Length: 355
Image (spheres, rainbow, N blue to C red):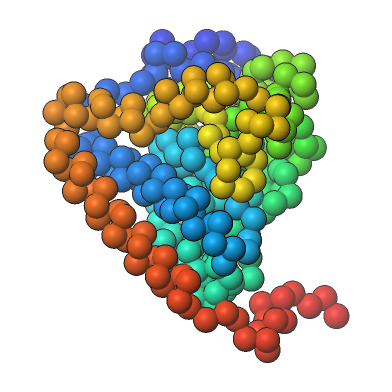
């Protein structure tokens, strides 16, 4: 293994296999450890996800976008940090909160916007909406609203990679609620048993719909569940894109070498409600003070400040990048809203028929 010295919080031994878990307090790559082009890519990915979803917030009230939307605002560092380590042919399996993963993996902004508007030019041909995004051309094998349902699918993809002697890595993103599903445990067990090239990324934003993690789980150590399956488990600050990138790099490289799967628990926070463009503080299940504290830890602002302070980017460059991203989003908006709806005769196309 190539995990950095001093980064391990716990080491377990069982059946002759070393197992490692870590809270990653000291495993943070510096800016000098990462090529400048990668740093800029990470920033662009996060900003594109944020600005794209902020556009959704502004136009959703027009009632032209009929699909429910589960927004990723506040969690951008995870999708960017993980997917920046992946190749085009690697697999990503997403959840109902899918926009960030799709864009970070290289998905087309126009096709995603068209999908949200239910248009035939969408990445799922207007039939999937926000929660069922798919684009095999960039390795996005699909997203699902079934909690934990994407995890065994990623294990199947990892198994196919091994059977076909390919070097593809399969990544599944899921929330803290999915850890309570049997599919999570069965998937980690099988992936460890077969040393599959899988990376399990838990985006722990502490809420499953409206229920806090403390009301559902007897512990606050999701990453330590990895020890039961003899695989490395890491806790990461999910609002620090460099921490996410560094741990994901090790996990992806480990998987590609054939050394087996890894579990990452990325602790973060969603700014918007469970579903929809509005904040849901008025529902009473979380407090404004809690939201404010996390907003002060904005992953984009934190990274932007560091890039400027350490001379990687100038403020003028950031402004230019922002204008270009906004132009792309406006183009995507016009494309998506202006595209035609699917024809009625397309209703049963791409539907699996068991008869």
